[in-house]
Structures are given as structure tokens and as C-alpha cells.
Length: 260
Image (tube, rainbow, N blue to C red; front, side, top):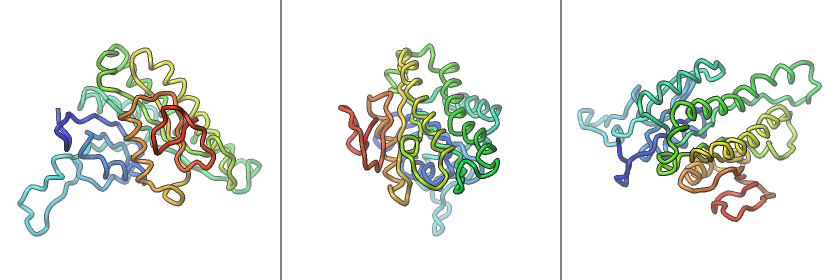
């Protein structure tokens, strides 16, 4: 088992949407602390991986310490259920289990003219629900079936958990044609609560972070830090707003987050 900067065994993190803004920020901030399985469709995070690594242009023959913490990139189209299955199989084959599942991949299709804008909003419903709700459910379910279900003691010792990336639009009404996207995030919020309730039986937690728009209104690095904060905590079943101007507090909420 590999170790992080502190010398402690690294936790295995399965991260979807790794090539996006938040996925890249999380990998850059934490790739030396986690063994990250970075699932992406096209772009890869700007950190060493099995596909590419860093060199010193002045001394290209000299080992670069950062290369000791390479992420494991899996290219996949998560809109295809068989690709989700492949991601789980490859991850478990390489690391044996997962300590942190971060469901970050998402689809966003805005409809500025509203829900009556022809059939565009109706056509966008299924793809957004599939990626924003079905994929997190499928990944959580498959990991539970194939790794977590009969490992309650180990799950609790490893503090295994799921962090779903939601949005404040799941609990707020914003202009700009976000109705379908917001509905999918509201569904993800409640799905998170149900997963937390059911997975508690075998010692796996589940929470969601619901940031305001980033990086426009919330620093992307703050959202990445919230994921790591939830991973080290003990809370479960919460949806934690980031940048929320109308927070609903919870007794055990992390300092940087507001919960509902």
C-alpha cells in the first residue's frame, strides 16, 4: 500500500469528472495524499499519471518526486452503463477497494427561454438525469455489492464514504433556464440522504456538497477542500452548502460548510 506525505497509508479515491475544473483542482491539491482513480472522458488532470509524468527540463534524467504519486487515469463515457461497470472493475482490480467515492461528473444544459422552449428541455431531461443521478447511484451500488457490503468492520476502520457534488440550484430557484439541471441536483440531494441511511448498515457514510457557482462566486479550491473535509469527518446524510447566503446550520457541520 502506498503512503502519503505524512507517511500514513493513502486512501483510495475514485473521482469522476476528473478532467473538469473541480476534478483537476482536487487532483492537484490532493494527489500526494490519495491514490486517485481519475475518471475522465477527454481532458486529464494536470498531475502525473500512468499516461504522462513530470520531468526536469534541465536534468531530464533526474527523478522528479511528484512522479511517485501518479494518479490512475481511466477514460470512460459514463453515459453508457457498461462503462460505469468497467470503471468499477478496473478500480477494484488495481486497488482492491475504495475509501472515498466522489461523484463529480455532471451534465448541464441550460434553457434560457424556459421549459416551453420547443422540445429542447424535454430532450435534455433524460441525459441530465442519467449523468447527474443514475451514474452516482450506479457507482455507489456497484461498489457496495462488490466491495463494501460484507466488510462493515473494515469500512468503519477506513472511514469509507461517498461525496456527491450537487449544487445550490438543487434547493434554490435561479434564472437562466436551470430547471432540469436543478431538478436533477435536487434528486441527487435526496438520493444522498437515502444512500446514507441504507449504507449505514455496513459502515459507509454519504454526504453531498452543494456549492454556488465556481469559480465565479466560490473558489474552486474551497469546494475541493470541502470534499477532503467531509472525507476526514464523521458526518453522514448531509447536504452542505458552500457560498450559501441562506445557510441552514447543523450541530456537527464543518467550519467551511453549511448544511441542510
